[in-house]
Length: 101
Length: 188
Image (cartoon, chains in turn blue, purple):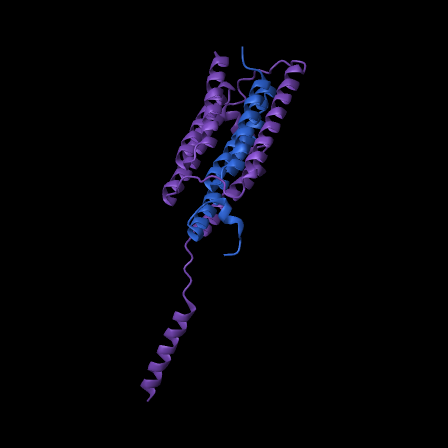
C-alpha cells in the first residue's frame, strides 16, 4: 500500500507554506535565499509525484531543469550577496532599501 | 513499508523546514536545509525515482549547500536581528501562511474526493536510461538552453563577486605631471 497522490501534494503544500512564511520573516538575505530553495524543492516534489502517478518521464526531466536553474540562481545570488556585503558590511535586507550607493 | 518510510521522512522534512525558519543563526538554518533536502531525496526513492534522488543529493545537498555554507563562513555574520521598522510583516506573513495552508488542505480534500484512478506502476520511468533518452531526443533544446544559462551564471557570478580596482584619477594625473616636470628639467 503506497501513500496516495494527495498525501504527497499535502506534504509539498506544507513545505511551500513554510518556505513562503520564512521568506517574509527572515531579514537575512542568506536566510531568504535558503527559504526560496525550500520552495523550489516543494515544487519539485509535486513534479515527481505527478510523474509517478501518470508514469510519464517529463516531470522528472523538468525537476532536473529546476535543479539546474537553482544552481545558477545560487551562483548569481551568492555573488550578489557578497558584493552587497562588501559595500554595506551587512546582508540585512533592510539595508538594501537604498539602491544608490 | 513504503507508507511508514514516507511518513517518517515527511515528518523529518517538515521538522527540518520549521527549524530552518526558526533559527536566527544562518549556519543552523543551512544545516536544517540539508536535513530537508536529504529527507526529500529519501521520499523520491519511495516514489521510484532513484535518478532524481541521486541528483538531489549531488547537486542540492552537495554543491549548492557547500556554496551557501562557504559564503556564511566567508562573511562572518552576526545573528539575525528582530524587525525594527517592518514589524507589520509578521502579521502579513502569518495571514499568508494560514491562507496557503487552507488552500493546501482544500486541494488535499479535492484530490481525495476525486474518483480514484489506478496508478500506472511502470517501474522503468524513474530509471536513468529513460530519463537520459528523453533528455537527448525529445527535450534536447531545453537541455542546451539550460547549459547556456549555467555558463551565463558562471560568468555573471565571477563578475559580480570580483573586487573592482579602478585606478584613482588623481594618482594618474599626479604621475603624468611628475613625468612632464622631469622631461622639462631634462630639456633645460
